[in-house]
Length: 140
Image (cartoon, rainbow, N blue to C red; front, side, top):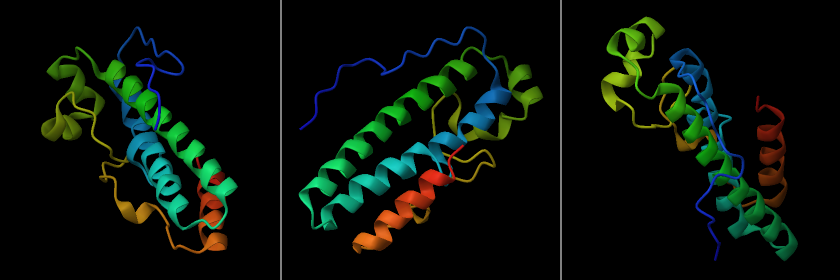
């Protein structure tokens, strides 16, 4: 189905951890306009598309979004690695660490866990493609 190179599309090399940045960037993983929602949206919508070309495009975009998920996870991981408890508490990221420690869990910057209600899959070509356009127009 897919070939996986076992390397990031764009290497992530963060030399200095920064939990404050991690708090912001994690929304790109699990927030309402994040990459997890995008990949799930495209890969789910493709099954009801009546045109093979559109199915192919949604598949390509959905798998590209999965590559973005991987990059965001690498960024958050590197921004939070080897932090002391004092650094975690001082940053305000301690509420995340209570439940997940250094694990990457899809949440918004406000700490709201990822929810499938962020994505629209109606089975209607116009509704689904409009959802895609709206979602991509609002990403940061």
